[in-house]
Image 1 (cartoon, rainbow, N blue to C red):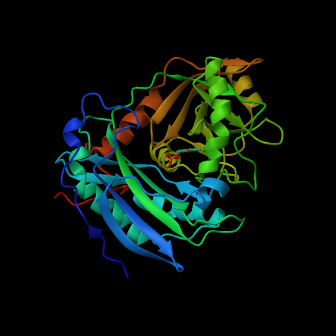
Image 2 (spheres, helix red, strand yellow):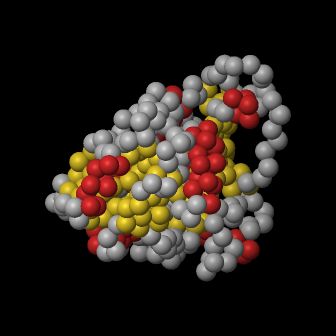
Image 3 (cartoon, rainbow, N blue to C red):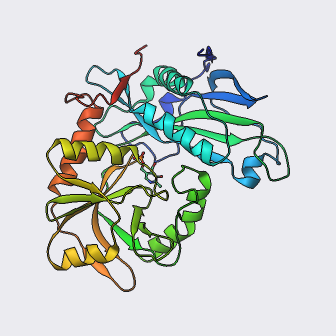
Length: 353
Ligand SMILES: Cc1ncc(COP(=O)(O)O)c(C=O)c1O
């Protein structure tokens, strides 16, 4: 049975301090958060309360052993200014997939969705109205039991925060094909949205930026031959009329944008193949002028068009025009803003209060 969410509203909203024309990236947070505790084997006390600091014991296990997972999703406004969520049931399932891999408890999917709906209803004035902008939602779970020792924690917190994000006008990006560091290996945690995956990616990302690239192109952990992901995005190539994206082999995050783009492209009549794809194949397709487009997909940016893949020994330049990448980006934005029919039933309305 769904537990009642106790709501305590802030006495003073911070919304007037936000410049909606110029939203800073990742630094502004809405007035409230959803929070729920795990103890004695169950989730208790689900509540929405003013967002504030949380006292943490220095031995909180997440800080030492890394039991920490998260999700990323967006709320947008439809043409009547009613808030909507994009495929939240997929995030609920992925959170539990990550929790399972990290030895953490399942979070009830119906409570996950209800918490999102109620938080978004309370914070709806924080949803930026411009096309391509959204209220970014960050559900996460971490071990807050104070214990020194290597085992699954018995106390956790599950929290949802919200942060307004402006429209992304990303320039085409350059990817550094990394042949020294890896993001994930089969049997590891790459398929989970575990905080540690991101920690391990920070140094390689910084090094790639120092070399003039925007993000890392991650290759497989055994041979540095097969393409996995682009930064924190999944990746698509269009070669000789066909779209190809790396298959989910246990080391790749199953992106919700990725699955949506596959559906959109197939619906439009394109052939989309999920399979292993080597960097050499991309080089060969480029040399034969068969490489037509490449883009990354993810909640934060939507679609990021790719300009170049390179490293100290290779350089692949993509064609300048990206008709399909742009079409996919616009179509996703139009579905998320209710401008076109949601024929795939992806949007979940939340209450307008
Ligand atoms: C490593 C990684 N790959 C891919 C994605 C794209 O996933 P989604 O489309 O669900 O945002 C993300 C972002 O969540 C990510 O962190």
